[in-house]
Image (tube, rainbow, N blue to C red; front, top):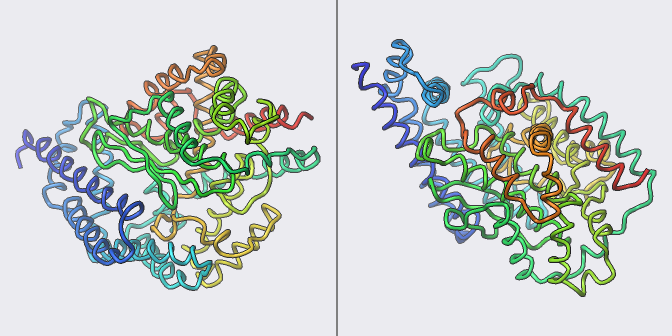
Length: 501
């Protein structure tokens, strides 16, 4: 291969990979939103075929030769080019280690596992899902061993979602976080209970949807490049350079759950829309750099902004006009306290931002045990209930509200869960910098101006796509490494005001 053509070859492979992955994402989106139940076998074959092609491209001789020629000739001259080499060197090195047969087995197990999970969750019966999860965990262990790892097999899986992160680093961040959350919970339990019963009245779905879309619009969500629909489990996916799909659900008992789910997924959507820009669109750089950075944006919008007093100074009057009967006699202060109520609950996605972190730490610890082999899948429900009682003080009344509540394990997303809590840490640190650089931010929220904050986040985070590693991106924004103290300080300050001690 001539060195002059190596970049052309890599760019072409990159384009084909992005198109294949977006096509697979479209099939998976359809599977979660519209596909009839009996379509699962055919869909599994379709997705497996695409993932086989993706693996072939990533492990191809052409890919390896192009990377080597560029590296040897030191031909990467821009940050974007260096990033493309960083991404595809890892993709190639992993792909050549992993046989295509394992990729196909994983794809098939995950597709069938997701379908089995839907019915097992509906029937509140873990046994229906158990053999599928056993297969997924078995294959994930094989994958970790095949790719290779340092210190812990979980690192091989974690690195797929959060490049550069390790079990040791997470433990160092989560240990003080868990300690402070437990201390904060003790303080809150000593306070008067907040009445949030008004959130559990009947709120017509159509008005909820209208209000959620208004907020998305104000956040800068472009409905010409993105859309929102319903799914069993809210998620965001990108199926084209100008085609981002977010989902929500309206079957929750509290009106706050679908609302904040919509804002949460809107944060993900904004990141994807911004990442796909004139410099990155159609390439592997035109997406979020990691799941934790992604979660930093969704949870920043959902909690730090969306549950703030300033936000509801503007939006509560609008919300109350939509639902005058449900909110009769409810003040803005009571509403804000209600949507920030801290209370141990079974369902992670509905958890308040304090106990949420304990949900994640619990799942992280269970995942590590499953992958290292110290916990058998058949014993997972009991282990789940034990940790739930230890961390949250409650035991689920059944698998539907416990071990079966999340889609991640059925989809093979082992190593994903820690990124949610890491996202809280990243988000608080980034928001601290936003307020420092734009002091009028909070006042703008109270006036209904979300645009300036959105533009700042777009410039500092979204437009950079995957060009920089998560830690490098954070250092560019804040000048510091990831530090849990920003989030811890945010929690204590906010909830002291909410619970008035």
